[in-house]
Length: 168
Image (cartoon, rainbow, N blue to C red; front, side, top):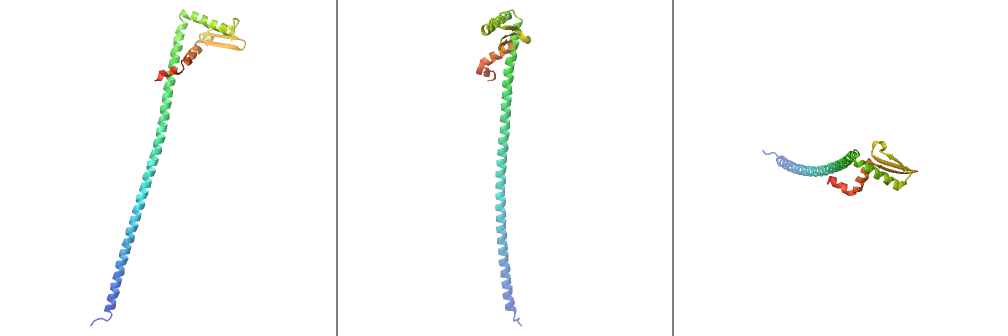
């Protein structure tokens, strides 16, 4: 005998099966959309991280370049200072050697005459002040310093931009 509920149960089973299939498809669709959204978010975050990394690297590189430039400038300036100091020391040595030569007396007399022309015949002359060579003169509040180190410094100053040839 056939069960009178069999067609109803069959229909219910078919509908349940259809709903299950539909729920599976909807679940699979939602899962696919969630995976796609997650993948997009991962890609966006990767792009942002790469951009942030590039920006940080660029900033660090700019800082490193600035530090390197400043160090190079300091190094060049130090080398120029050493070259200038070496020139001054060499000149001081040369005039120091002059002090022991017979020409020094004539130089000292010319320096004395220069002071007298500038300050007058009655100025006070100090020869070899502080053992520096050369002369100093005073007349009232006026002074002239023609010691050898001062003359060397003036001569170097008179070179002006030509002194830059030392480091070119």
